[in-house]
Image (tube, rainbow, N blue to C red; front, side, top):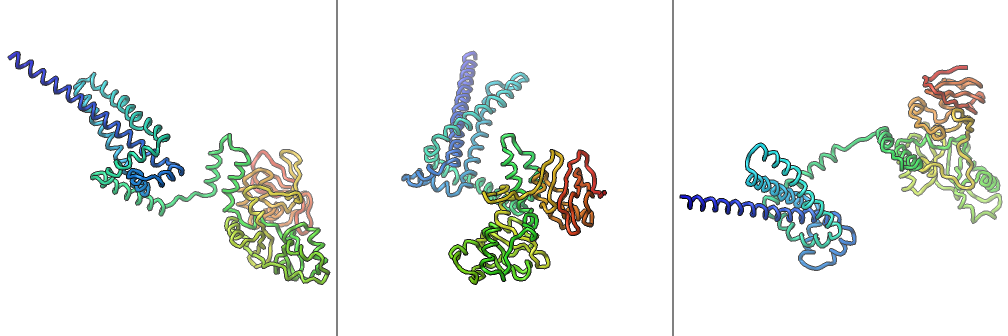
Length: 448
């Protein structure tokens, strides 16, 4: 009986040892498979243009299979992810079986087993099955891509991998269609808040202003950036050639509107370069034959739409018209671009914004200063002004809009934390305004 017991014990020990060895070997094989599959993911999806060109001209079954796999990247990625998950789950299951066989079931062993499962097995899978092979694949991507091509091609055709692959790809396509249909709508205000929150110390002030200009660009009307008709140099169609040349020399512009009788009746745009071959002509020269057809846009046209039309029509100047068809100003390609990149000046440009900085809280502006320029000088967003400006686009017009009349000298209004004082005005308009930035915020009021 003792002999039989010894034989049974020996057989049991031999069976246990065989189980442990088989489990360990299986885990090692699965880890190698996991490493190769993880490496192939990086090899295929981080392949640079040069490597792709090399793969295109290479001959052989492996290179050809790799090229075919790259034609369906979604199917390839699904195959890699499914196979990798199957292998990793296999490692976990067999490791759990092996730990059961080695440690058995007791309260102390359960805790020790849990620590091994959570830390040791997870670390091995991450390092051996993910991190190390992916790092290696970044330097040897083409070799791994060709080596794994036949294996991945085989896996993609074998059930249940092929079924799961089809289900995953189709499910992803449905999600994309739903997400595309649903869309994500973000307002300009939300974009501005995002920009403010994501501003980094390494971002320069110029870069930040450029991003702000891009965000506000599509929400800005032409009326806000146009040059008003009072400041426009134009030529009447009855002017002789000598008078035209004098106007051109005095104005210094490359394009000038031409009108008949009144500025509301713009009949064309004169390009100064067209006159260069005719500089020696006399007073009777028919310069009107050289004018180009004008391009009219409404006041409420958005700047992004205007820019597209400038590009498509190959034009640089537009005449802005009001709701009654009268010309209210003009807007150029330079005006549009300045809303994004800031002021564009050359050696002949005069300072556009006429203001005087008396102190950090005290400024003097002309009444005709555009509100958008007023915001730029004071470095404010101008949301409150925009919400209350009505039809006005200048600082003087804003004061008239708030007061309901043309204010007299020394009268002022208070809006938010700004005190706007009329320094000079006549019966038609406000000419000069003193702006004082106050610490407190107040509602709009008018005082003498």
